[in-house]
Amino acid sequence: MSTDHGVPFIATYSPVALAVLVAAFMAAAAALALFAMRRRPKRSVFDVGGPFDQYSKRVWPDLREGLVKTTYAGYATLWLTSWPTDRQYNLLPLPWGQPVLGVFGAAIVAVLWIDVAYKLGPASWNGWRWLRLEAEGIHWHTAESGETFRIIWRRPNGEYLFDTTIRDHRLQQELQAIRARKQRLVRTAIKAAISVALWLAVPGIVADFYNLMRPETANFLAYWEAPIFDWVMFLLAVVPNSADLAAAVAEELAYRSGAQFIPGAKVLGTRPTPISRKHIETQKAHGDASFVPAAEAVRRMAGPPQL
Image 1 (cartoon, helix red, strand yellow):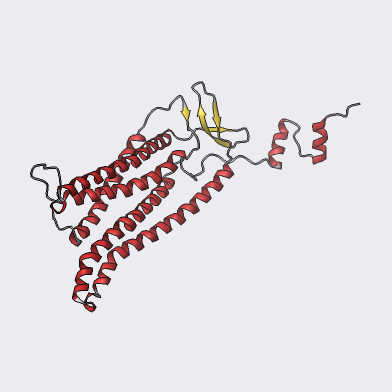
Image 2: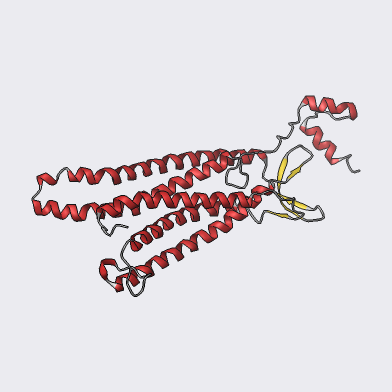
C-alpha cells in the first residue's frame, strides 16, 4: 500500500472507504433482516412492549450514527495500516517512522471501533426486536361496529388488550408521516448532492488560480489546501450527509414494504360500516328499530315518570 499520505492517499481511499463500508453495512443489515424475519410458528404470548413504533424509531438514529462512525473508524484503520510496520513489533505501524505515533494511532483506532460497537449494538438489538414483530404481524380485535383495533398484548389463555386508536386517526398519522418523510428525503438528498459536488469540484477550481499566485504561495496551497479540504469535506460533510440520505431512503423503503411497526405505517383493517337509514330499515325486519327525534330518545331513556 502506498506510503504517500497526502493528496494521492485521500483521493484514492476516501471513495473506496465509503463504498466498501457502506456495502458491508448494507450486507450486514440484510443478513439481520433475513434471519430475524424467517418463518416461525405463532407465539402463544404476544406483547408489543409499548408503542407500536418504539423499536423502529430507535433503529434509524443509531444506524445513522453507526454508519458515520464506522466510516471514520474504517478510514482511520486504512490510513494507519498503510504505513510500514516496526521490525520488532510487526503489528505496530510507524507513521512517519515514529513508534509513539503508532501506539497513539492504534489507541485512537481502538477507541473509534469501541464507539462503533456502542452505537451498532443497540441498533442491532432494536432492529432485531422490530423485525421479529414484523415477522409476527399485527393481531386484530374486531368490534361489533366492524371497527378493527390492533392488539398490543395477549395471554396464552386468549385474553388480550388492544389499542383504542381508531382507523381514521391512524390514517391521519399515516398522512403526516408521509409528508414528513418526503420532506426529509428531499432535504437530505439536496444536502448530500451539494456536499459531494463541493468535495469534488472545489480543489480543481482552486488549482486554476495557482498560476496567478507567487510560486511559494502556490506550492504551499498545493501541499496543504487539497488534503485538508478533502479531509474536512469528506469526514464532516460527505459522510454525515450521505448517512442522513441513506437513513431517509431506508425509512421510505420500510414504509413502502408494508411494515406495520413503524411511525405512520400503512393503515390496514376494515372500515366500520356506517349506520344509515337503509341499515336501520333493514334491521327493522328483525325488530322495532327506527329513527326518533332527540327529545323522544331522551324520554325513552328516562323511562316512565315517577309518581
